[in-house]
Length: 426
Image (tube, rainbow, N blue to C red; front, side, top):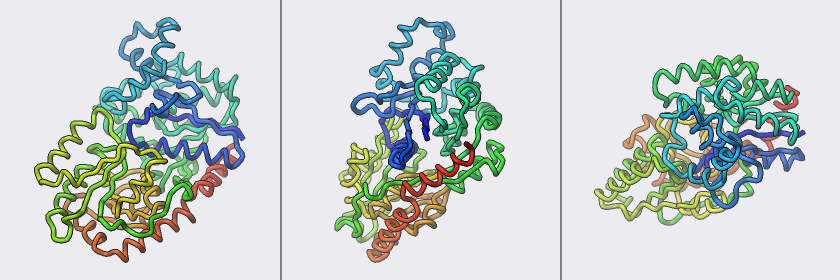
């Protein structure tokens, strides 16, 4: 079977669980004997090293300028080629605002309008590439914000379309009014052009059935998976206690909540040696926020106890996980899944997560940590204190989490479930 996965590139400036999910899924499909490729749109998948071998469609610089300056919609080919060049896309990926919903409302709407939007030429180029170069059996979209392409792909390429569902609400609900309602309406309309939706959790399936008015029979649930053999297992907590954070370092992911909880813990007896280890990178938008958190630690006289791991690629995470006792990413409104949880559990690191989003689902399925509520620094500090003071529970959560990853969240098992979805619609 030939599967083309169309995914939005992010440039590699921060930890992107969705992007890691897409890359891991394509790799698992190839190991299962299928021909799977990743087709990035907007930005390259990473700005580290060379650009991906496949071209980047809907180049971010190109489509943004065409949206803002109508006279550029008929620019000559040499100019489009320049705007889609690797250096310019890498520069765009590193700039503030490249992953911010505010200010991109009209562009998002135009993209969802497909052939009737301002990216008709880009859609034609993508269709031509699929028809004459790849000839897939199935096209799989990474998320629903790409559905403006679905109708033409089904009709002109003549293949079924599958769409994953993960964290679209984070983008749409952050938009300025009146766009959230308009975009959800467009998504509900474009959902008719999709053969099957695949949500990454039961929680998020429920969210998107409501927001996109999806019929239950069209929505399947396939959790995210990892390959546990790629993670070194650390059954014992480190001698020096440390709280870990692995995700994009910005406000919505709750980094400030964790910093405030850390400050509270450091004032309590027995936690004088406690450290906070953070990794996951940030965008240009996030730097002012991070400096504010660092200043809070400085004012508390504990800035030396923060360690930031700048390398967050899969090959670099072993040292990070080896150094931490628990992992906590207190996302303010919860999350559709959170791949970092599986990466931590595969490494033997227990979780402490707010009882929001899909976090209760993952904790229940794995037995690899604790939940707390409400999502406040005080509640988080109390939960962290209880688990950090109990080494036997840490080891128990570590063993349960690793076992669950091996038995329930192993990549090939979940890839087999996805293949069953494909077979149903072919």
